[in-house]
Length: 194
Image (cartoon, rainbow, N blue to C red):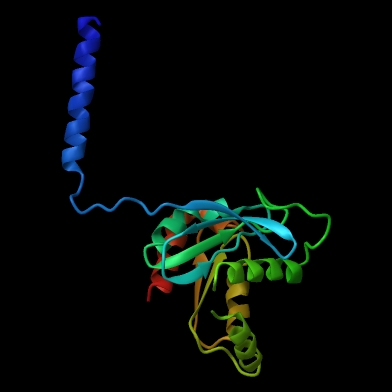
C-alpha cells in the first residue's frame, strides 16, 4: 500500500474515533422496525411493527404504503406498539380481484389486530354505538393539508366531537407525512403522548 493510501486510512480512522467520542453517552439505538406478513380475512397483509405498549395502528392513504409512516414509527415505538399495515392491493399485501371497499378493508385491519392479540374491538363496537348518540368527548386531533381539505376537515371533526384540536399543515396537500414531516410528526407525538 502506498504512503498516500496509508495516510488517508489513518485520517479516516481518526475521524471515526472522534465521531464516536462525540456521540452522546446516553444515546439509545433506534428501535427496530420489523417487516411481517399475516394471513387474515382471506388476504395476506404486509405490515410494519415496532415497540411495546398500547397499540397504535397507522393506516396509509390512497397511492401510499405503510412505509410513509417510517419517520413516525421510530418515535411512537418508544411508548407504543406501532402497527402499520399495507392495505389490500398495496405494496407487498395481496392484490385480490375484489374487496377494495372501505368496509372490507376495515375488516382486514380488524382481523390483523385480532391476530396480533389486540383486547378491545367488541367493546369498541358497543362504545361506538353509544358515542353515536352524543358527541365524542375524547380528544381528537385533525391534521389537514392547507392545499387539500384545509379547514373543512377540521369542521367535520367538530360535528362529531367536543374536544377537537385542528391543525392546518401549511404548504401541504393530501400527503402530509411526505410533504411536511417536520410539522406532522411533532404534532402527532405531542397528541399521542399526552
